Amino acid sequence: MRAILTYHSIDDSGSPISVSPAAFRAHCAFLASGRVRVVGLAELMQGDDVTGDTVAITFDDGFENTASMAWPPLADHGLAATVFVVPGHVGGFNDWGGRRTASVPHLPLMSWEGLGRLAEAGATLGAHTTTHANLASLGANEVADELDSCVTAMRERSGVAPSTFAYPYGGTSPMAAAAVRSRFTLGVTTELRLVGRDEDAALLPRLDMYYFRGPGALESWGEPGFFARLWTRRIGRQARAWLQAGGVA
Ligand SMILES: [Zn+2]
Image (cartoon, rainbow, N blue to C red; front, side):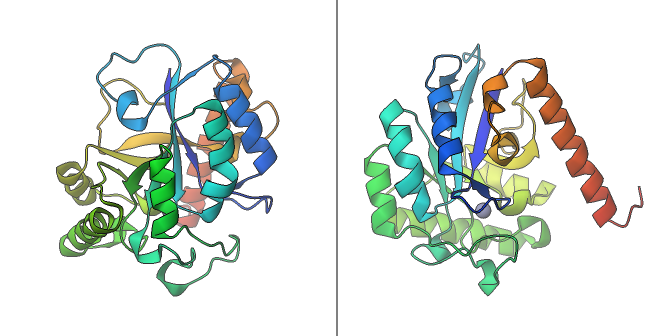
């Protein structure tokens, strides 16, 4: 089975975007144990050549702690990873749209120099819009601008045009997916499931590692407990979305 793993911040706050450094180190030890094969995101999706248990590792937003807390154990184990960058906030903070979110810590993001060092060390940089915009709420021109200005900034500042994209907040629409499809090789969402066969490359699902941060959770990969956790989290998310929508089916 195949999966794309999502991390945001590696810190001890316990917030919904956080996995603790200790839990992350345990994840890295498992991922390097040989139980699963870790490949780059592009390699994971290259045809159906990839068989067996294979995962790709992704980090959204480009937090400084991706370099300071995540990269050392990844590098120690030789694990590939993709980091999705928000050019309008590079060197700043995760106060998207100038607003802080109460449930999420205010955290510094890597500078262009820091991103460059990480890329030199082997990380792949991907695009995450210019302003961390929710593409589901934008018109076609705004979507195009968020994507094109992001690619331009990354090409100018990092020297490499990104070929992969992550939707902020998982916000997508048929129009946004089409815009992503025409500009990038791959697009990843927050849809919580394994990668299946014949996936739309512009709308790939991922597993948010927040739900697998507990001891032994990721290590139960492929066992009944792993699928039970996935199923419970999916149902919980759907129930919350339904309630937030007013409970009207
Ligand atoms: Zn994000």
